[in-house]
Image: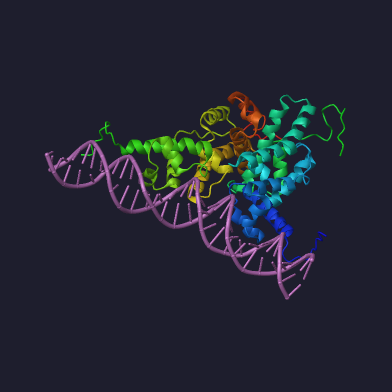
Length: 199
Length: 199
DNA sequence: CCCTCATGTCATCAGCCGATGTCATCAATA
DNA sequence: TATTGATGACATCGGCTGATGACATGAGGG
């Protein structure tokens, strides 16, 4: 009963997965508004009507994409060198991602937009804010938002292709550039070392 | 012959001007893609069909807006305190402006997009690049693009309303925040124009 | 005073969007 | 094999966009 034969020639789970993957790529590359349901279907090789059937609509597909990436992201502050490097690695390869897109290019769909901003807070702003507070900086939330906006601005500016020199940078160049703009945690932390970081 | 009576009840020049002004405000606030011709007509109190008649279409109206603002902008580098302050003043009051919008949120219309990026270079990136070169920095064009992206990222992040703390800042707070991220020209410049200093 | 044409109004078009419903088709089970 | 439910292909809908052309109107020149 309920045998999940993997050799099914018509497999709804596979179609779901194809749509999710295609949507993930396209939302990461172009953001929500500029990717159409027909685009997603074409890239997935699946009829776009199935988006409505399996996810309930484009905005809920978007939310599903956000959820599907929940675990793949670490929650280290942006001032952590490894975190910044890893983030850049992913961004250079797969585009800014749906969340960063949503921060500076908010979509009209309020459910999707709200979800994206909640994730941005959870994954990026909150840990950064906590780190800045640890350092003893004033207004840590404000500064965390500032640095996040800075980071996303550079990422999007590079990806949009409108800034040719920036677009031509390698991941390493970009990393060193960002370090001149985002004050990183030193290896010898000037802040009091009373709270060691679990890794 | 061609008497320009100012009391004409039906005045094409006035309609043109109203459309131009309304478009200027809306493009500055929402960017190109997200403002519709009907929006512009409604705000201007003018029939949107006249956009096509007087400008040739939406994209040419956009270009006309860019041209109409050509003189109103100074061409000082972003690292100049007065320039940064003035820019913020305008941005806080009237929104990011069509050019900054276009840099991180490129539109599908290629003519409009190309024009906007040319203006961005002329007004912001080029003077900043020249200033950085004067300072003796390496890769001045790249750094100029980086700082421009940083600036626009903060501006858009604040304007989008997705970053609440940033959105709540006054012009002065924002200015001091930006100074922590964009290395300004000192009043007594520490770097001699002829003697680059090692750091 | 009447004609003419600039100006403005309006209906409508074609294209794209997301979404929905219908129907054919195939796999699993009896 | 016959039945049935799941799966997917397709046509189409209503809504929005930018654009266009036909028509109304009134100001200014003769």
